[in-house]
Length: 192
Length: 199
Image 1 (tube, rainbow over the protein chains, first blue to last red):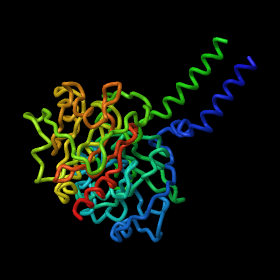
Image 2: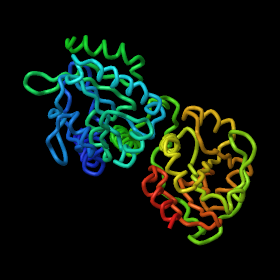
Image 3: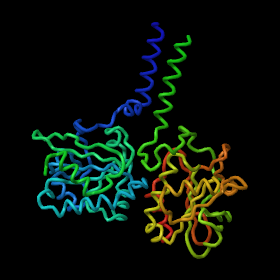
């Protein structure tokens, strides 16, 4: 019995010392009602993107610093054919929000390129004329922090009065219809 | 003793799973990808070198007809992208990435030829999942892996290495990357190599 326990401890030590991804793979994807991790991202180079997110930082920023009551996050990859097909729908969603003067300063969209370099993110942005900020997550740090989701994955966060974020939507796959998706999240966040 | 063996087996299975996990997988291929686990990074070092003439070949294309390397001589630079096998991790996102970088290849007057050792029906089904590819996908199925062998990138298991060859308009090899089979080559590096052809 003692030997078995020792073996378990030895195995765990081997796993977590030499294969830290074992620990990381244990991170579960946050769901509706959970807080969202206050991840750190690179500040977009484009001044328009920076202004859209309301950032003053130079190099990196915390997600909670984005000036928005509701934040739509798309975890994507330029190498993901599903994300490529989804791009026009997200552009439509941005367009619909932009035309709504009552919500356009409150609801923001950001894309996080899982495992993508800045170069790869820029290819995706250019190819699909993406009008909202896309930031790289080259080291998969964010991707791991949210449980290594498949792409595209959507989180919608509502900012609480204390500045922290609460998840109101957490799903893999297409948003389907941008108008209906917006109606859903406005309803979920009681922003309407 | 049996229990101790079980503990070790479970531990090593966990380690195996952890190192072979596929990061950033597209929902597009959910449930369709066979995960071979972590493989030996590179099995073959090609005997081809920079400055050598790229061996000519003719292969059937998924879209129909055949494609010969020699048809591009004097006209275009060529990038050969060998990937190990259809329906496997990494391979299933490498070409979709290239598929939205067409303008970057065009800027450097380069055509891209994707090659695997799979047969045409398999390649057809697999590439359909990627959307409409702008570049030819060629089947090196029969004689099995003959072109991969010519290029020194056929593994003993019958699949190809994950390899990139950049060939200039004169038919000379200008860049070789026999890459770690478990990871995707950097597109940025490849484009920089194409930029060098312009100088």
